[in-house]
Image 1 (cartoon, helix red, strand yellow):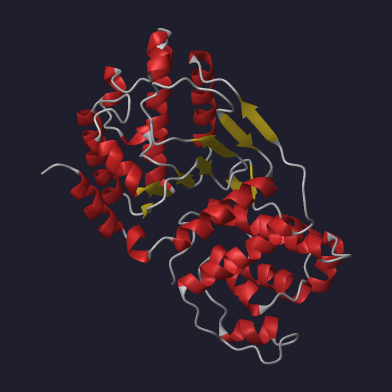
Image 2: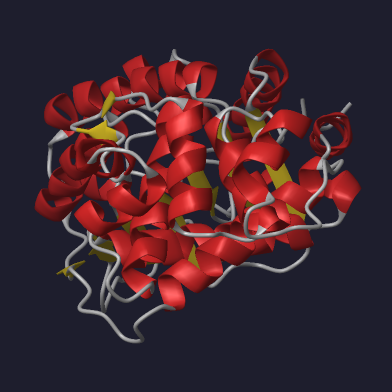
Amino acid sequence: MPALLFPQKIDRFRLIQFLFRRIREQQPGRRQQVLGVKAGVSQASVSRLENLVIDDNVKNIQRDKLLSIICHGLNLPQDDVEALLWLYDGVSLGAFEVDRYLKNYIPNAAVGTFRSDELRQAVLSLLDRAVEHGGPHKASVEMRFKADATARLAEVKELLEYEERPGQRLFITTIPTSLVHPASAFDTGEIVPPVIKAAGCESTFQPLHKRRQELFLRNIERFGERSIHSKRALEHYVKDRDAHFTTLDQRRLQIKNWIQLLTANEHYEIGLEDEVPQLELCVKTTPVALIRGVSEDRNQKNPFWGVHHIFWRDEISVFSFILSFEQRWINIQTDHRDKKWVVKWLENLLPS
């Protein structure tokens, strides 16, 4: 079985239901009831395919009903069918399924052999068409303009709510998240931001921050995470004493712990690239995406101005960001997202 795009069903099924709904909407007259009649299934089966995940509860749909709907109902090309099956269970069409579901509208259909990179590209092609269909849409956007202590506490609470939702996080930023510091750092207060300390809010901030780390550790074990970071920014972070408000020793301990987490968690992956991202992206298949500006100077000595955070809470925007992440991920040099290579590179950052 080729490696799946997401290890857990909840992420894959959220993606399937979004793709299917958008595909159905592209075809005139494809109301659920009409599509069900053409596919030979009930309207409830079509509705189930569009609602595989509700309130974080995952429903199932039988493979034969899925194939009836997307083949007999929608006459999808074989590449699209294989892409959806890869998301569904990672099992390609068998000879019997090709004969039963494809040959009535693709007479020359045959069993194929698909590599994971081909299937990933087929999914991204489907996703690209899905988010572009219909042109501009009304995005649900919330902006945060302040970065004082009150705003930072509100931000931590929002992020905590976001991270409590199940699913794999996709993350682009310059330096490692504070959540990969050793657990002891969350008790001592050594990684509390200066703006929080100045306001005397440590006792409120620390339990929230520690809870975020607990969720992070649970989530990378269960769902995994893929994150993209700048090699240049990481080198600066580990070698420049004034690169951050935390001390150089604390940052080096953080990198050591990061390596341990990366090694211990099968589905935790890191990609390294040369450029420094201008925006930080944090997104899951659950409909919330977060962007904020980043800087190579993370010591927080400079005053903040402008928009601090932007949240997107509509499905099309969120899946557009997921598409952008996936395209960026596959464009990273292959060895620069190979776990063994990344671990070795991070180890070489640290003084011997």
